[in-house]
Image 1: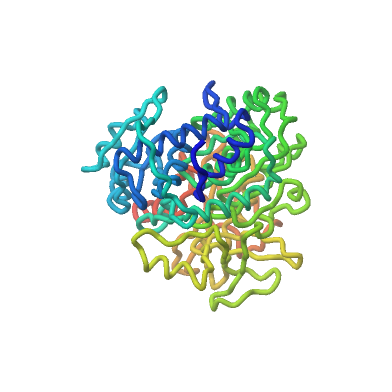
Image 2: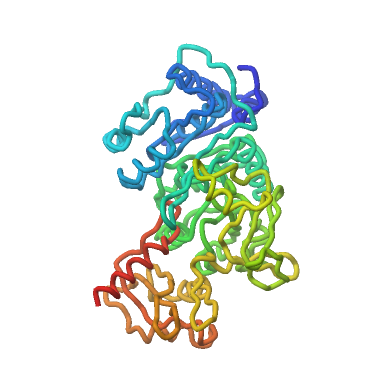
Length: 499
């Protein structure tokens, strides 16, 4: 084995020394143990080195989940290069903007995205790598990577304006692994089933990388398939898996769910957005606790944790600060709020971003004395349990009152009238804004609007009630299943103009 370094890949190398034959990654019938994974990471680093990838260079990847994604980020760690995962659901024009902004030295792609990558790349070299092929260099790359080097350049979903590239150091990912290990009580005997996209920090960093850094095994799915997930829970016997609300619902409503043996699972984790109790209830009823991870791209993301064994006693909470994080809840003047008083969540810890790529203004606006401003509104109860009320920018201010859409969406989640629904603010001459439901009907014929609006009677104060329902065929979501509310607001604004 090569000389162990101080970079992120050295964690996997050490497990290769301790348990060389232990399973590391399985993917579509092919498995690699820790010795094989460590060797392949070194081969990928050699391949990149032969193509003149140096410390600080960006290495882009475009494609579905594959073990190569893990090998690339760890290979970059060895060299001190920066891994740039591209969201495979974006358009060519969107990738062109990111590529021009990040200026990678090389783009590696799955063959299924080869034409797309070449169109987006401009003059940047593109390599389409077949799944049967391995990246193997013929020379031995020097191990130049260090824990202090930046490693991951992850672009946010661009909820306002152009996307921003959050630059995370190797130390941030190491700290995130510690936070994740605590969240899961992780041991080398654990087995993690990953299906969320690895181009997102959730799919990559909540469970997958921390599992490998902790000596545990990962079963990687190319994409989400609820039937395959259920089949592999029985076959592979995972102890953990990571979900978002939409995938929780897809599994729990699948015809095979009631009869699938889920007994291997110690628990599930959920993240990406507020988790409605209705989405987790079917799993609790089957004895599978569902915890939560709160965070963002900028926090790597594990910042607040509701451990699975705490979840049943704290419904609605996202937990308490993770092991290496501090959390403040502040008002508009930056002063800490009292218990039960909402404010913006600020996060500090070694896992937060170093900076926004080539965007010092955004960096300055988002970080104060090491505290990252999340833009999320939440509160803590007297015992320190934290609750997310909503995105700060999504608050609906109607007649001078703040209305948090998450409250209304929790009511909708308990209804069988919708396949999916969200609440946004719509401009109103009298009230400034009014809350509006935008949803997809569960039946071919949508119910009367008054039937929907009656759901809120006796549940929420009347000033919080939505004023209208707008029916659509689908809601726009990002790769992690989060509704893109800025697109929903644009949609209803267009409808108003058309009227």
